[in-house]
Image (cartoon, rainbow, N blue to C red; front, side, top):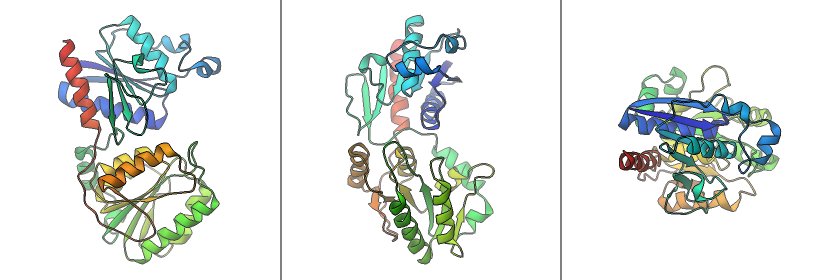
Length: 314
């Protein structure tokens, strides 16, 4: 029975990746997960990942020490190192490039479009997540009537927005919305979920373009039916700003139509080019394509690497 800690600053992408991997390990090993979120004060945060942890946060990190600790995010790097010094028996895992080198953890996962490599580093094309086949099966059973009523093929539209890497300007929004309108006019049923980054003006533009067409847009009220959309989708439209959304869609084996705003950085394009080479992604122009491919899911691969290390240490 393993005790697993997850460590992050609570940023959704980092926290969910940690939980996805922890849950995959737990499914094989048993035990329990304790989620820890750190909130370093400004001066400490500015020095991370190289500076010391904030002593205030350390008050919440107390024994019993975990068998496994999984961390992600720049602010979590120093806390993972602090934990390893106090509990050498803990297997430490870091998800994504810690920026401090391969000694930041016993085992490191990075997306293949990052450059870090080493004997303790696993690189995969897509990112870990929590959208397991069992989660999607349950979501399909519990799907909202409004989604089930949409005509097939049903297309899950995973809309992002501006990020630190992708500007997503006005022209990009107009092009995306116009392509969605063309797709809806073809008779496909569109299930649209904005993300935290989607600007209100973009959501409104999508709503105007799809008014009177076979589409349902989540309005932000109540629980996001994101997993239901993944489960019901015959295909996907995804904006290029989110590697997590791309990874979750790629785990289904359904064709991903990617919308590329201007200025997508080389790092993200390496991921997209890899997905195109695998047959998972086509560029979105308002038309639907169907190219089945072998699903890509890094979560069980990462979990198996961790379990092998836990067994070797026991």
